[in-house]
Length: 263
Image (cartoon, helix red, strand yellow):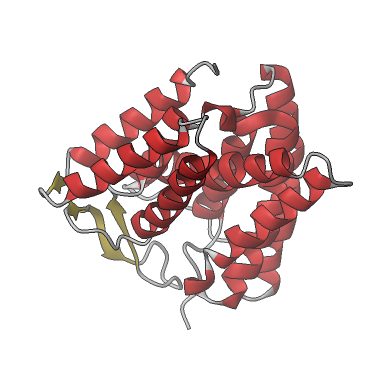
């Protein structure tokens, strides 16, 4: 039995408390919570392979719906009203989401193997090597495409952005795309030549597709960044993937146009 990843659960719990402070649940949210419990129960029926398959399938459907804010009963509070962080940027607004973090809670509680534990030294090394690669691929690519420009800043709401991005965005996304998808595919492909590489590329591709709503440029850049996050996860575990992802987001927010240039 895998030990529960308490440090990650504690961080996610802190983020959820932050979100709950400005939002609320409706009773319809209980349906989603019940379905997540059902999916977790099915996944742990190891003697019934079909139930495990259906449990994972139900979770994937719920995860997509939660990430896209499709499910009723969640009232996500707006923490930052639409505003331009720099004069040349498109307006930015931020919500503290109550629905999306449930993805991370489910994964950490039901699939603790996603953490892929590594030593602190290895996690730090992997992060330190992966972050520059992501900066070159993603931020460098965004500047070449004319989507961002050099714009150092630290607005009044920066600390709120920082907490939200780390606890409610980056941790959840890395638990899903690197821990669950890449880690799960690596387990399935372990007998294939270059199975780990294939799992990394497929997870990166799906991460890019998840950003398709922002346009093909962001889809491409997210996919490239996903390669860096995937390498960090592969060699440094979930902590390295989170650190790399958050580090890139923080550099984008603090040093470049955020979220992108207007017009």
